[in-house]
Amino acid sequence: MEIKKRLVEKSPATANDDLIVITGGGGFIGGNLALYFQKKGFTRIRCVDKKPVYEWYLKVPGVENLCLDVSQEDNCHRVCENAVEVYNLACDMGGMGFIERFRVECLRSVLINTHMIEAAYQAGVRRYFYSSSACAYNTDLQKDPKVRALKESDAYPAMAERGYGWEKLISENFCQEYWHERGMKTFIARFHNVYGPHGTWDGGREKAPAALSRKVIQAIDSGKKDIMIWGDGSQTRSFMYIDDCLKGIDTITHCDDLIATPINLGSSELVTVNELLSKIEKIAGVKLKRHYDLSAPKGVAGRNSDNTFIKKALRWEPNTPLDKGLAVTYQWIREQYLARKEGKRVVE
Figure 1 (cartoon, rainbow, N blue to C red):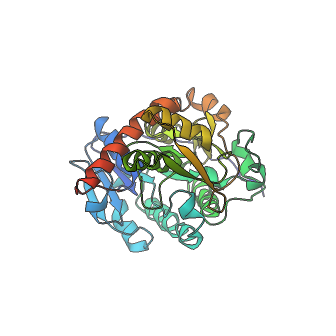
Figure 2 (figure 1 turned 90 degrees about the vertical axis):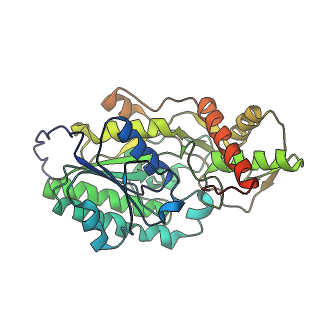
Figure 3 (figure 1 turned 180 degrees about the vertical axis):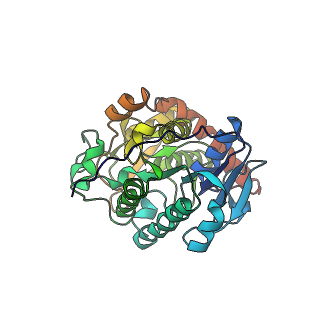
């Protein structure tokens, strides 16, 4: 049955004192998003995360912080009270070492979007943003490191990454149906490997830029000048700097042409893991002996973002050069590493 297109009614502009809700607000992207909106002049921001507040990556002064698990329905209704816009970034996720090992936990994140989108609808939220992932794409198209860039239609026929990718794909469908059937404006961005300061850099959930930066710092500190790489180093990825991610989230959520339409949000600058490490070594001023763990989780062979659609829709694409973003990220991780070594408390 063909779905009829809904008439898009113009929403009032979001006022500075309208309530913005960010789930996953204690995480890397969520905390930075709260800071981004505060700098734009918004005065009512509610951040929500199930972690204790002292474990949040970035706590923004003046923001309402709630410690609640939004996989539980009652909490979602509390979170959405009086909200005008909701940015749902909450999920159990991490780097490849996490999502390949804890597939059930990743799948259970479907409860978050199921309850959050219904609570947002009942609360009369005007705009609802959902953070999807490039892991939703068909893995059969990602078996070669020289992969062609993935366009939005490549999610179907569906063959998403087990666990995390399938959760993202079904949650995208929820967002699309809440618009088509109930008329709530929903927005969906498929993130491609976000990195930057105030992110996870140790403990198993970190992604490649942070993990390799930490390993380089550890090698320099120990004097061993060796480094272990997961896989053979030929895997290819693109990496998006946090500032581009924030701008993309904001712009996508306020573009009515993109209602209920999944869109890539990522850099198109493709590098191998070996090339990524070389860039970090250059920043650190060191050359390390490389060892390869072929039994370690390494994900798909190649993945890149086709930005044709986002450039057409927004006349913009994530454009921070990887060298520039890595330099800032490496320095921040080095500061955290040294602070922890001195016995200071840091968020990892």
